[in-house]
Image (tube, rainbow, N blue to C red; front, side, top):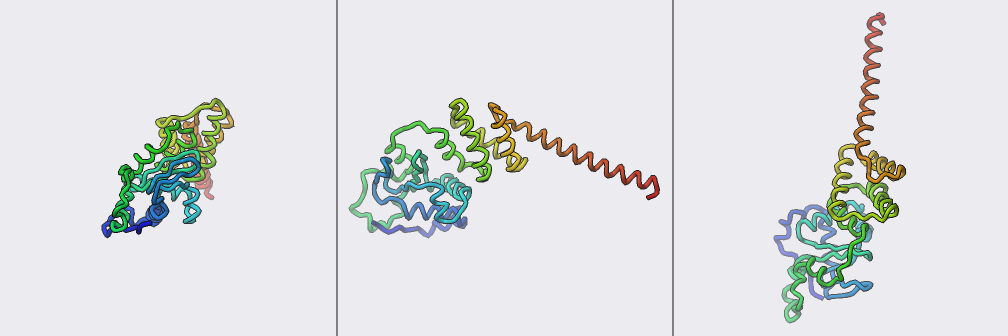
Length: 244
């Protein structure tokens, strides 16, 4: 087992000063396999670790959203590749060998040079299986800024409803469209309003989420507030007319 070596220029990495991203990266790097292994029938290549968002969250006492955001940063920076299976997620350190003490590696070169590209290594070693909707969701949600409240009380319930209702499965394009729309509506109307409209869509057995109701509800609120304001101004005008 060799030493982990971090070059000085690592301090110039864009996420170096982001505590959560740096913590998650170091956790994955320090716990990565030093040789190829199997975990419950799944190949976990050298330089990779099989874990989950919840395990990392518990280790650092971070929220699941903070962990997913950190993983999104690592994926985007090409520091870590990830692939989700029904038994967890495999995170692979990109160019793992570059973090090892060169003096400890002499005479220990592996035949698999593909390890330097973690994502390719994972795909090569794993049987190609079709993702179910839960796996697809877990893989894509890290790319969106959506709260755990909406994820757990809204999106997961909607996906479960669609699956149980007619066996419907979102494909990647459809799932991305759904998540992008929910992220946008949460920003516009708030998490609570979005969860409520998802719950209403489920209880009413709708085929899709009636996002247009959010705008109507918001307009109704504005109408009520405007009427209250108009009534208030009318009462002031009448008081002035009556010399009060």
